[in-house]
Image 1 (cartoon, one colour):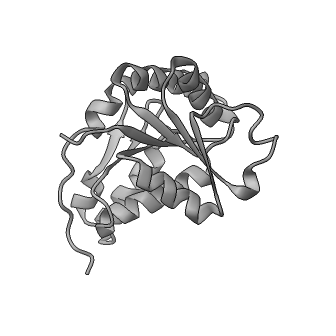
Image 2 (cartoon, rainbow, N blue to C red):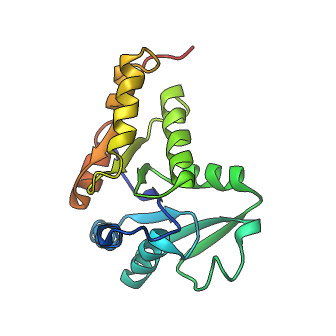
Length: 191
């Protein structure tokens, strides 16, 4: 079993239009509290990202926010939800810092930024840069189209099935930490 002291969560800086997104963020905060797991996130206070960080802060979860210098503004940080805030030079340093501080990764619903973070950390897993688990929270079916696309990548010969099998798909928030704690498998070499 992989130990998860800090979970990195990628999610929207917008709220989306389904109340379940907020509910899932609040539920995840409670799960982190109950398991003594810290949160690592992008450092903003808006949208699902803000709901998650704020609720974690209220519950006493250790929250590490990593924000690029250009986004350290009052509109992005209207309140302090972090136990620790790290100001990174740019987006690349931000992601590298978030990745190095975390034991596993979860993508909740979000936009292009969330997708980019998920794609990068999953690519790094495929390339062997880390052996940490990567998951999507798909309680609302939000990631169904992405999963279908990745299945097409496998069927078309652009991705090994073993790689796709390592993307953990979570349909209920309560299962997040148990599913992310599974032992990661070795993947076929890309070299």
